[in-house]
Amino acid sequence: MQLANLAPVPELYVSYESSQKLKAEAGDLPSWDLTQRQICDLELLMNGGFFPLKGFMSEADYDGVVNDMRLADGALWPMPITLDVSEKFAETITPGSDIALRDQEGVILAILSVTDKWEPNKSHEAEKVFGADDLAHPTVNYLHNTAGKIYLGGPITGIQQPVHYDFKARRDTPNELRAYFRKMGWRKVVAFQTRNPLHRAHQELTFRAAKEAQANLLIHPAVGMTKPGDVDHFTRVRCYEAVLDQYPSSTTTMSLLNLAMRMGGPREAVWHGLIRKNHGVTHFIVGRDHAGPGKNSQGENFYGPYDAQALFKKHEAEIGVTMVDFKHMVYVQEKAQYFPSNEVPEDCTILDISGTELRRRLREGLEIPEWFSFPQVVEELRRTKPARSKQGFTVFFTGLSGSGKSTIANALMVKLMEMGGRPVTLLDGDVVRKHLSSELGFSKEHRDINIKRIGYVASEITKNGGIALCAPIAPYTATRRAVREMIESFGAFIEVHVATSLEECERRDRKGLYKLAREGKIKEFTGISDPYEAPTAAELVVDTENVSVDHCAHQVILKLESLGLIRG
Image (tube, rainbow, N blue to C red; front, side, top):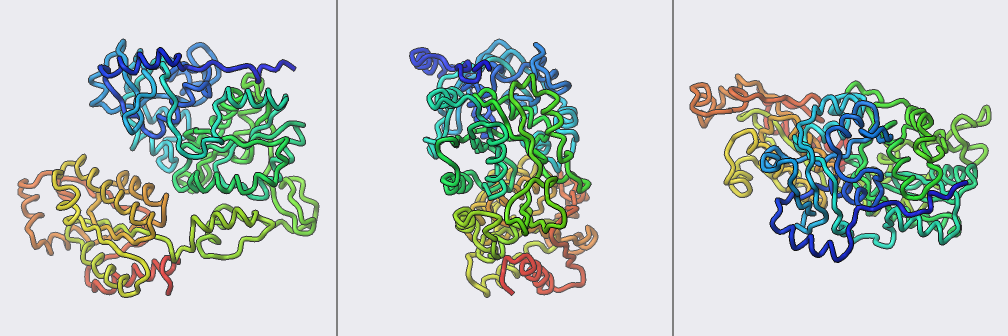
């Protein structure tokens, strides 16, 4: 067998001397501050993790990848790697110019020599790459509601790698891993991709995979961006380190991959295979529903359970990595051990705990059996995720002006303060406008900024174990979703739609705003000259017509009790 996996892979960095010279010259170049996802992509471009890519994709490469998983030169590549920028920034850039790419602190990481600038058809990209233009898919939602409208492409000149202050000893470039495999004499290496903590089923699966392939094992978790709501990577890495001693150290190693996942199912599996090949791996575990994002808008899984394995198998020779396919691992009670789900002996009892069930048990402080996970992992998860009644959360009221949001939020605040136990903060629309957003007007863009500021403050309160009550109008679905994602990284988000009718809101209008809007004296007024996109899946809907404020606030309290956020 040819040991191509151990030879160095090309990187895009220039020498130290050249990098110092370029840094000095870059002061005169236009600068783009990279997003978190773009930093992940840039790091893997520069260190060879995305070889053969030499930069962000040109339009021709992008079209080929979107339409049939091929770069313009015919090479297999399933995922667009593009630099998305705002229209405003793109207007200042012409192909043929250079841009300094900087991290969020302003440190220059690379120079992009722009060859292409175009506005992509994002709905087409979503359909072809992710199988559906469905906002329930986190990356499709990112594509439409977070990513910039214009793509820039061109080769990269790498100046320095992004700085990581955490788990430095666990982070390896492709060439550092290849050098490690050479040093250890590892000829065959099977990689395990994960974005979740390791439980006993994962350990059993990885042991079996290494045994089947007669290979050493690389545990290679993605620690860039994963799916919103996933366990944060700090907690996950502490969980991995807690169970590493369950593996024989002479045959197993762990390295962190700063990959921004796209949750792209079958295409993502092929992409993961190519990335692992660049890291010197010879075998790759593709499990059930590999990199699946969960349910679509119809409540069905985006991808079939073994679609990823089928697509990987089809391209296996070209990827240059052998697939080790694994069925779902389940615990058989009578045998007191794990089996692949298709090998369970007859008349045996299968025990399994889903991700949802695990989260429920953690949330409610219930027992998690030892057959399912390691005590060290459970302890680490409990430390990060205390019982739900001790966690911070946000109640987000949305509704038309005059619907009664602020009044109910005030009543709820008093009831929660009476109970005690956690600090309560009310982020009322008018108060926030005065203290956080005094410079903003009422255009759609400014209203979006205002709501995102409220969401940011609420997420910080939630993260630190407090209760945030928000009562803005928040008319747009996409903005409310962005706030939900911001907050759900740290705790529960309860959307309360105050569904008071427009007629009733106009009847109550003490400030005369609706009258002025009807006369055209207030532009872009929600419900009159600007739409209110009513939530379709709010956790609670209340209507304040002919109902007391106290009753509405009590409905919210009952909802919080049913969710385990407050004790009854």
